[in-house]
Length: 345
Image 1 (cartoon, rainbow, N blue to C red):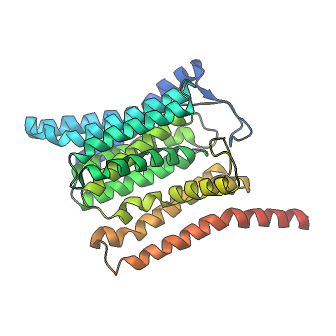
Image 2 (tube, helix red, strand yellow):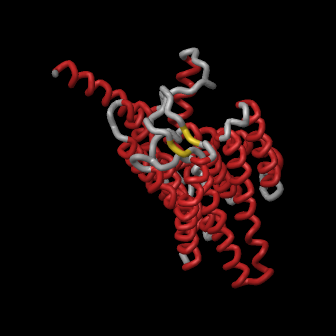
Image 3 (tube, rainbow, N blue to C red):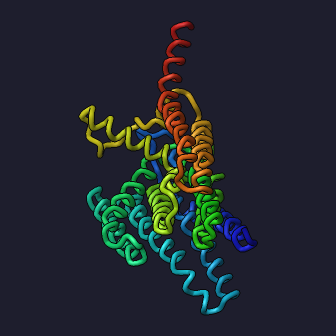
């Protein structure tokens, strides 16, 4: 990892933190705030849409990287900036949809329509460079819309999504370094650095929430990197490693609510991570648990990253099932323990 890569992460963090100091007061004056409701996990009016600063941090860092490439290679290096620029464009397009939602100016169907159109256009462009051709356009689009919304659904506790983004960006940067792809490494470090710059503002009595602006942008960023790695032939296990708990939580909750006959479009607080918090854990403790589990899941994918999909690497993924079972059982165990303590008291 060279000096430029390290600087990209540091610049993203610094730019995000600096822009937060300027942007948060403006958002509050504009009335872009989150007022607590019955489904909220916080009790104070808090700035919403703070994820705008993460987009700014990523943009500044990638512009710096592009300038560094140009300074070193001249016009011959311009072609290497196509992937980072596409990454930025997709991220900002989804952030714009999220900001419209944070401003309460976009209806659910309009929001979904916008997500689908962006995902289809991006996937069609990616297909031009993919050996899989047009057959994967719809698949990419479905994955993109699903992932962006899944990330949005888990943005419910202080520090939860930011810490996950740091781990995910760090893991993808390691993948980029391993497969010798500088673009993936740089944009992943920019994402991780920007999330790190926002995290201090999102802990304990959070000064701001990411809002749909941030969660959509982060989901789009992860989607873009994941698709690019897939095209380059990175094993799917390696790509999905940091996502398994989010996909499992959102997918299981959705299936359960459908089974219960609930309206899945209505707000709720029944995700696994939310039930752990409701059982008595603090926001930060739940976020730390999820971060640690995600790190372990990534570590278990290292053999596949280094050796590919072989019979020798499959056993490590069996432990994913153990981790998911633990994650699912934890809120049940905590709730029963709390009830037992109440009865004994």
